[in-house]
Length: 412
Image (cartoon, rainbow, N blue to C red; front, side, top):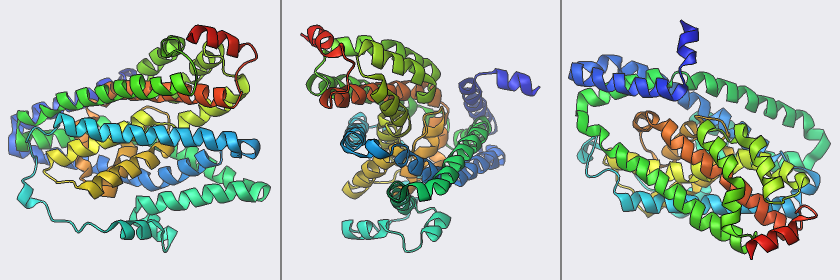
């Protein structure tokens, strides 16, 4: 029986949970609340992952490069990763607000949403530094956990050999959290079934209409980001024709789109970047694995920004300039900690939702179509890895010996 279940592709199981949940909700109507505990258990399981997963993956990302990698090349590489992530989150917010994703639909009446006290910018900065990092983890204060993880990562690199035991422990912890995440993701079909049944039973079929705009917004933002933002970087920093670039990485994009895994695409990406784009193997072996961990413009930039606005509109929760800035900041930081495996972006979305106080239950709407979205998100991520490899490789003279003349001729 289990063999039959796992033989079905994951995205099909999640989609089946959505369809069955919708049918159950429409059939049972208000009585569909009896299956809502399935969704609540799933949400609690996701909450369980957030703090240890964010802490371990962020520390591992910061300590994955040492020695020469912490010099100019490493700083410029990470800097470009973060720059494109910031642009991606800003683009995601712009597209989300332009699409009017909620279309006036509210799952909860606006007058039932509790008014929240919005802290000042100065207070937000003060609150980022935890008085007690253990308490911050226990309370699930993600911004404080992120700040502490950054300090730990930097300190491990500074201490060097004496901190190798701690680095190995946290690295092992990250691997354990990846595995636990895989376990929890297997519960997604059941969690989606419970939450969707309850939502459809309470709000009806019209609740699913905004999903069409949501998918369109994600794809539009990813395409614009790849063509305009990445295309500009390739042309001006990488000094290569964008047409040649996209032709060179097209095989990696195909694998990324079909597998939805940055890590799974890594061998193909490496081959495309070294053989088709002319980046040296030494630099490619550094930047691409690093990018598969911390360069997540699709999963950690565009996706959380659009999803946060979408969920806020569904629940009738107004967002102001402060919340939009917080969404962008947490989306960029979340992109550093997002693991390049299928399904992790949904976990990292909770970082952004928690930061601005949005309900995690809204994830159920997105989970049903996550596979369709994840295909484009991963394609964007892998493309971004190749862009940074080319741009920094060109700027720092890290191209293959025969690459400059070859690429210049093609670009002209």
